[in-house]
Amino acid sequence: MTKTELEKVAVEVRKGIVTAVHSAKSGHPGGSLSAADIFTYLYFEEMNIDPANPKMEDRDRFVLSKGHTAPGYYSVLAQRGFFPVEELKNLRHVGSFLQGHPDMKHIPGVDMSTGSLGQGFSAAVGMALAGKMDGKDYRVYALAGDGEIQEGQIWEASMFAGHRKLDNLVLIVDNNGLQIDGKIDDVCSPYPIDEKFKAFHFHVITIDGNNFDQIAAAFAEARQTKGQPTVIIAKTVKGKGVSYMENQAGWHGKAPNDEEYAIAMEDLEKAGEALCQK
Image (cartoon, rainbow, N blue to C red; front, side):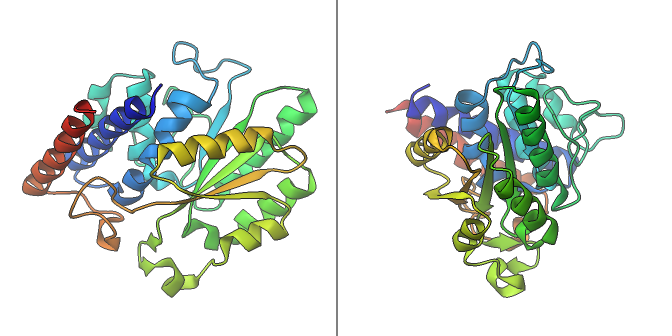
């Protein structure tokens, strides 16, 4: 896909996020919106997947370590054809398969159930090691939050991945600078993130995570990196695409009311229309 086509898909992913959280009257829009471009590139360009065969043996794997941003994950899965987009309106409803955190037993395309912060990346490391042991060519991708990397388990998993030289593994850190309690460097600073991962023998790439040119270049570089895992530190804007949500920690885990929903959808409609003029 072209850059403009990817940007258009990302707008639709963001509409799905806002619609799902508004319908549920709960959820996590801020970190879902910041990662929407990463989700879009992974599922529409980077990964070897087949919506018609979600359990394809040689598929690439993805683990959403920051499982609370499930609205973003579900929205891109729907856009990619794993299930109907209309299902997003059932987020967190009783009886819906789209619950507040990813469920691998009931949601097509989900490779790992997650939600307890720090644990998802360990599962991804295990998948990458299994691929190496089985002589498979699939790649494993994980998305973590910058607040999430305050968890010690992230660094245990990183130590193991670096030691085992898992070059089929890519961790993306959604570095939007905010977590539920405020700025990450006020709560418990994980900086310098790049130097920490270098110490664990990762190949480190730092990008603007809301820029598709930089995203594409980073994943291409990761594929060319041999003998060590890669971490992509993606500097993003929390709430990206919705005017009143951008860079506001309060929108970490809050649903828009009807008036706010209308404003958000208007923002995204305008963004989509602008892309159509390109």
